[in-house]
Image (cartoon, rainbow, N blue to C red; front, side, top):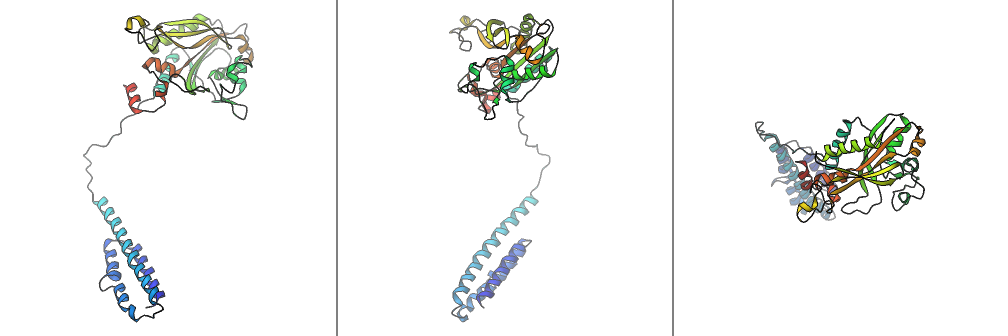
Amino acid sequence: MKADDLQALKDAALTDACAAQTVEDLEKIRVKHLGRKGLLPEIMKSLKDADPAERPAIGRIANELKQELASLLESRRAAFQAQTACQTQAFDDTLPGQWRPLGTRHPISQIIEEAVRIFATLGFTVADGPDIETEYYNFDALNTPGNHPSRDTQDTFWLESGELLRTQTSPVQIRVMEEQKPPVRIIAPGRCYRRDTTDATHSSNFHQIEGLYVDRDVSMADLKSDISYFARQMMGPDVKVRFRPHFFPFTEPSVEYDFSCHVCGGKPALAGRGCRLCKNSGWIEISGAGMVNPKVFEKVGYDPETTTGYAFGMGVERIAMVKYSIQDIRLLYDNDIRFLRQLSG
């Protein structure tokens, strides 16, 4: 037996092992090559008669054949046995199935869906717009002056293209008014971005719901009644709403509105040591609103002499924190199932 002949024998044995279809075929190959009377033991016995120059190569190839063929036979045998066990395993179709627990909507999604439902009863429809906005729609069309702090790179995420990540969903109002003549009655829920340092009450990524109602003879009374209706529907029939004078460049006159604290009922002194949620004031600031500035109407081609309207905004996370008494906004983003399950009941 020469080294070349033994190498050919090795290759043929490994090929046969790979082509085997059953455990019985593997056993026949093992006996043929590795058994007591197999080819390999016979080759080793005749090694003394081989050419002295061929002996090292023959011995090396013989050892390789023994080790590689034994390993291959064992792995193929284990694979066949596992396949057989899987095929013969009994399946009891009377046993109950393994059901995954049903998930629940995230608190932010719950607030958005509830707000959409409430405003739909007032005739509002949902409008949407891009997250990446132009400076015109995010600032200029909303009567925001060029020196306003929100235009600084410290407050807004500016892109190399000159566009920015929208700081509010107000640009949706401009886009809708450009395409639609009055009456307009929309809400615009969506994600917003600002360069805020993340803490218990701030996040660089947050959600807003902004509303716009434009028609003839729309007044501040309409705004106050609609916001009050929303507050009662969202927070409960006993909630009170307070409006305070404020300033926003895109509304005139402007107000900020607060909801009475639902933890202490607007009476923190009666809550024992005081109410941490409203900081003992009895009120929780929600957001801003006001009558649309005539300059905004001029930007979109509306006649400010015959057209009036109001706009409002609110933070979804703020509503969720108030409604569910959440002390830290970061809990809404940690995706801790234990926390989210508390709000799903």
